[in-house]
Image (cartoon, rainbow, N blue to C red):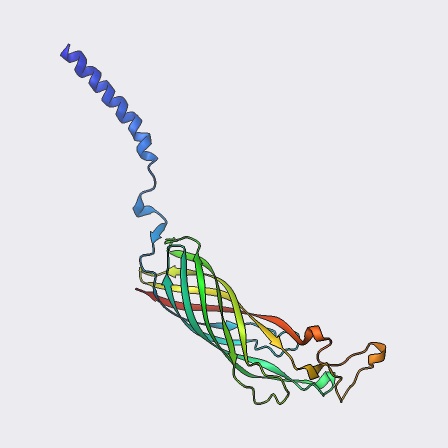
Length: 242
């Protein structure tokens, strides 16, 4: 009787082992081989440099191409969401328009057009609190101001001044270690240009035949006295978290 019980118990244990094997295989990937790694540190500083690629908008007066330098500070609210504040220096150029000159000769330049951009924004981390193969992609949006320095060569009534700035962006962080990462960031700066009302007048050097529908004024209609201009920028940087 004892031998029969022992043999039956052995068969039951063997069957249980055979069933347990495939179940164990379904538990998941070995954590050491997983492509995902926890992002342990969320707050930190990033410095970036890059290029600005703009066309100046319809009247070529918006700051366009040049270099950019930025610094930002991030605070992690959760695995998915973090906030940041930053300051960027845009060393760009723009054209100057002489509104009373002829159509062919009214533009000159480009001339230096420095812009400072303080901002605050939110970043959404697409892989949450983890990296994938050490990469952490994201999308973000920020609001702030575009503060332009004066352009001495511009003697018209136009000044860039200080404008509301909206900036969507997307990028990726590549982690070199738990605390250090490289960042590649593509963004669009949006700001609203506003032109003087006198630019609706025909230029003295080449007035158009308004009666026949020919207009040579710098601005063709009241609706065109202001417009939103977008300026792309590509940046790379180094971040340190703690």
